[in-house]
Length: 71
Image: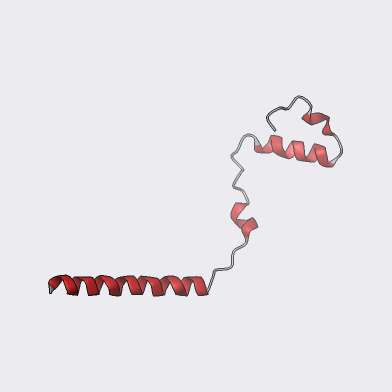
């Protein structure tokens, strides 16, 4: 009988966890994706280079890409 009690306790714990998860899913937290990624590349050495490429392309100077095989 000890096994049945243990099984019942375990089932109750699983049901409580499922209930908690259902509540979390039912009320999702609003998230701003931009705030989550802002600053995430600040320590990346290639980030400034990527910004320069983008700026040059937007300004119509695609010559910066000549000879760049790794893009």
